[in-house]
Length: 297
Image 1 (cartoon, helix red, strand yellow):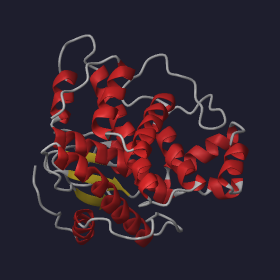
Image 2 (cartoon, one colour):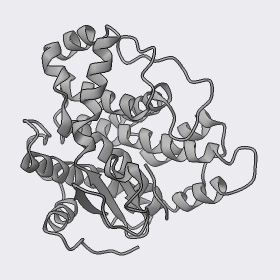
Image 3 (spheres, one colour):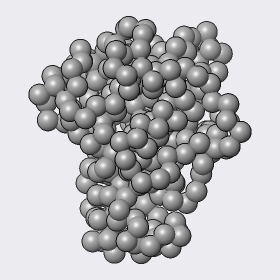
């Protein structure tokens, strides 16, 4: 979720400061990092710190190779509507979903959303008789999937918001916003292009992390990634096995499960192959939404 359009400093709270430091510190572990374990406040903080460290480090060379600043964003976990310069803290979805705020270069990570995405997907998958197939592919029981994988789901949501940080660093966030605020017939499509590009970039960084061995990649992790992206798409009606959904008649706002998963998977393939995630995802989103691709530095 992209929020309105830059302070380069760590937030004042202890959690945010620790996470900002974690994001600045390069990923040097010899074993893959992960978000495994039962969700607790401590394991959730550790998960987001790991994701910030690993995912940011994977984007930084791509940014610096283009002569762009790769200063990591601030990362702030919130347990209640956060005071911020981008959105009104009384808005309903502020306490539900994570978001990027370009005015203070902060990724706000919702501790509420992490409990929701994969669990709600699993419940709907069971209702539509798809969960048994998911369980077989992940080597988990349906009962285990119904408990969700909150931490890994939050890491995937964070990866999407980090995509908006990359767009900001590359100067294309403002380009998307300018066209979204225009009066042309495709103005609204530029919001979809920006959001679907961020889904693609989430896939890119997770595919790159899996291929480079910096993040643990298991069938259960991949299920949580896909379940999160699907649930973020909203309407799960008509789901079939292997995360197949009916295509939306038109792409609106962030897009539905079909569109979001399609762009996420495209990004994962780009990341796994070592391709350029910034250019590749901008082009993929533009092609999918029928919009003009943004100029890249």
